[in-house]
Length: 369
Image 1 (spheres, rainbow, N blue to C red):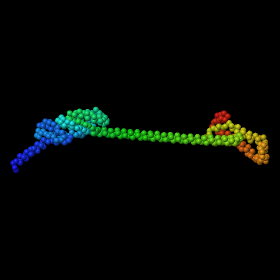
Image 2: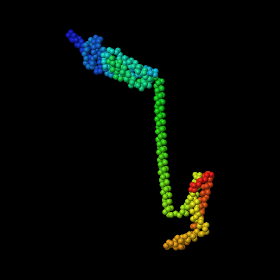
Image 3: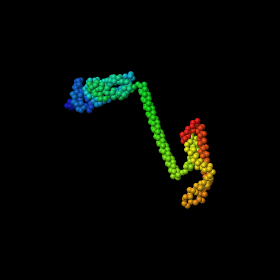
Image 4: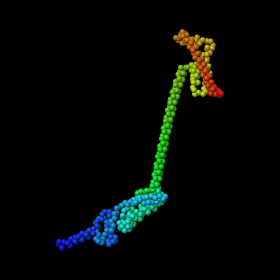
């Protein structure tokens, strides 16, 4: 080999080594702490950097992105002397690489221990129920304490979250029973409320049904009464229009008396005071003439002759054609009606005396047994 080539190769190797030892390329979101002869010199920023070979060296390489640290479950005693295991999640970021490398030996261990002590101080003043329902308050107090302590370490704690709170098994069983009882209570309340609403709706429906039935009955009675009143009015108008004789009315009056005693629910009967007047009218109309011995047939023919003598075109033979048996039948019918009326009155009095009371409102008299 040529003696000149060897020195050139050695010189090239030395230059390459010096260049490699001088140039430092730092990735994005990384920070390199440089020491010169064992003393902190500076922190390299991302990009191309130059250092003195042999004199400068990289001590620590730090990641300045936000990082997540999950600690192991730590036992903590509450105010009511219950041991619970708490897992925490820590979100932190390195803001000062020099302080993070030289102010604390192991910042992760330091943060973990500080978190445990702070949790014990905070939860020691709370009971189990307060611990389970006050996570936001615990997180805020933890963050305030950790941020204040880690500030001088060049670390900023962004968030602290409680991942899990595990009470003892006996407490879990008691809580499950309590929740089950609470759910059963709510179910019973909802069931009772449903039954109450159902009963209210049923009662409202029954009420509306009764109201509608009563209104229907009322309308039916009004229409029935209206019909009866119109029927009575028509009968009254027909009677007055035809100029009915008082004898006929008295006979119809007596004819209705036997129906008074036909009802099974009557305990006493009211005997109208006009009964004797009706009997007297019928008796006067038929009985007096038969008592005087005047034959009803010829007399009626006489009256008919006298009444029809003044009419033009009427003749006596038409009046003589009236059968005398009609008068006799009328007298017999009147006597039978009077007898039936007397029997009905006697029966009514007998039944009223059996009950203990007979009233005669027409005469204003009342007799009590």
